[in-house]
Amino acid sequence: MTDHLNALRSIVDEEATRIIELRRTLHHNPELGWDEHATTAAVAAALGERGITHALRSGSTGLTADVGAGEAAVAFRADLDALPIDEQRMSPYQSQNQGVMHACGHDAHTAIGVGIATVLSRYEGLPGRVRFVFQPAEERIPGGARAMADEGAIDGVSAILAFHVDPSIAPGSVGLRADAITGASDRLSIELTGPGGHTSRPHQTADLVYAAAKLVLDLPSHLQRLTDPRRPIAVVFGRIAGGAAENVIPSHISLGGTIRLFDLEIWRTLPPRIERLIHEIVEPLGATAKVEYEQGSPPVVNDSAVIDVIRSAAEVTLGSDSILPTEQSLGSEDFSWFLDKAPGALIRLGSALPDRKVDLHSARFDIDERAIPTGMLVGAMALIRLLERAGA
Image (cartoon, rainbow, N blue to C red):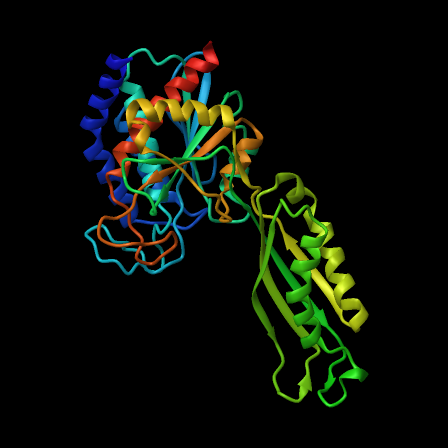
């Protein structure tokens, strides 16, 4: 095992500089979801330069690549898209596309995917095949993971891995968690209508402002009372609009918010329950509600057996002190759609900057690039161990 680890370390050391340069190129040229044409081309070129077979998605963005051969097969997912944010941090590789930046680390995920593919293509004795999935539109609803899963991108694989950079933990470390690690994030839009009226006579009309306030307060509490308290649901409104004058009860008010939760079973049955509750709250007040419920991605539920394999790989490559527990996040990740096809795990990859704190989706987001060779090494070892388990 020591010889294998030394071989992997040697390849990672040789390739790390080029992979970091690829990450900077991607960061400099970000593209939004479903429009990652230059990004797809850059990844295809990088794989081609390394002699790695790849296939572009027909008529769209994204691609897959295969390394190795054999019946045993596992997969690695990387996401390509950036966010509609103006980058504020000044660096030589700052975004040159106004209003678009890699503020969530997808440039690093993609570069690491190319890096792991490169390492394994040079590694002698790979015990099977690894499918690398470079997906578009992780930040969109519906996202690229669902599309590629439906297209069969990971059919036949026994497990799938993905990284997500974590700016709260130091480079050289990984955060692992079995069970749910990210939440579902659904979108809710409600249009309230009524006849309108004078604020001096609210009893003669439907007071939509009052109805909207009741929704904001009562929908979360009613929903939680109808749900196992050990399975929390976060209903938060981010938009309320309506009315034009202080003494006029409006005839239209719109509300919008998100619903986030960790429980996959509840998520699958939630939309009709939400709509029923909304009508039950506002109809006694004389208001009419039109409800649009848009389901996003389900929660990411890490497979415990896959986490055990990753943990053993991280212990060998990084040492046990570099493996950290990680908290659940109600942020959404469409990697979950691949987990409908195969067991897998999302790994948090330490990327904290040495001089300041930033959060994901910040206009000043960046990573400590020491995370990239760490991801290459841990990812390569974990995929090898998963192949060994699949072929056993």
